[in-house]
Length: 569
Image 1: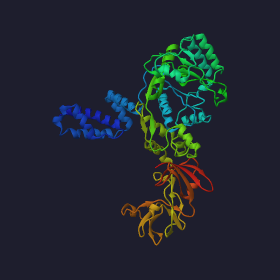
Image 2: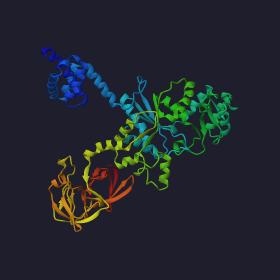
Image 3: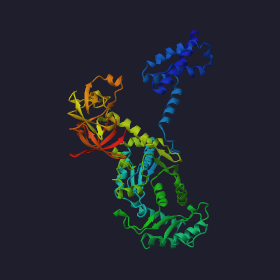
Image 4: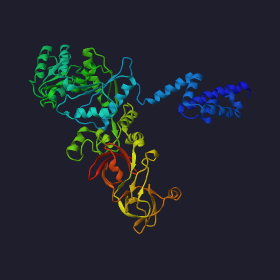
């Protein structure tokens, strides 16, 4: 190989080595460089016996560079390749697809019905909207669609609970609206729609109108003049009609191929007062498609995300938008999300019924698939958001795996979670010999945090499955090796080779006399046991790891017992 060819090989190998190192943020690998190098330069193949030695030298040079130096040299040698690599990295960072037509900005809204605190499925909307807001430097509106005081009756506590949930997930709305504060705005737009000939009042019984609609026939009120319609609508606003007596319909196409789009109801009468004092005097209430459509336009919403089952909503609203000559927002439809692990249905009404029946303790019961429950268990909002984002925006139904939430949460809390022993259904065994206390590390990866003092006294508690057979040994973690003989645990030394070379099992334990009574609340019900004395000094809300049991959030301490909520293994 002459010097000119050697320089060509080195130059090409250097580019590929830098690409390999920068792409994977690690040392370059000779084998990973050889493949693309020889593929791009078939003329090198006749020197295949010499090429690996040249490549190895180049790889060694690249691996001696810092990460910043590697990136800088790649930019100098092959700026196009670096740009392409960075574009791939940026694409990989986005589990969510790009939104269409974003040049004029992005404004999105979450529109919860405040009929109760959020279950876990509700977290998907703010997670996705909040993420898009950050990507496009957009706006995030939270609008409470609370215009149904009867069948979807608002819960006065849910407004703040939902805003707290959004904050817990890591987002803050730029604007918060309550539709029940905006009735006069909807009335004004209904009056305009009537003047445009786009709406009429109808007193047909529901069943009678349904029969006419399904057969493509107009009801006798459809050709009513605007003045009469206006008068009757004002009577609706004044509360002169009772529920079911009169509605305001949007005039669409009575022969439309989809019966659901034919002359749909925009306003109806509801006798039951709204629970909010500010709205309790209203009786004429907009249907969601009218209210939501008007609000989306007035608040400048550019992109709407809604369930695939709500495709007809956009079609209904487009009739109103056409009357007002408004431009309809971009729409992203997605499938439903289900969650594994839970026996309770993702349904606000179902959860509420179980709470009212005493089958669940409340919205934060660990058995409930709610945001309040996960929060009390010590699951970080970030872990939920990451898992929801990974689901994307597919029109197919998707399932959220709680293991994905737990995996991310484990990464977030593990470093700060001190370790403690917690023994469930403990078996008491006397201990003879050995030191007065065990000294396991506070955290196995942070020796600087020191070691715990767990007193042995005269006896310890171990879990039933950890009791060794007569004559067998176990290693009491932080204490040493003991042998089960004549109903007691006899200390036999602290040579760790018993574990490393002889396979003696390592078990956790707690002192029989000075332990802390703990109630651990889990998805499978409450578990009681005893923790080491130091657990009594933990702070409420602190995350800990009960060794060989799992991570938990400290919930309360009192003289009778401490309470913790199980997060995950």
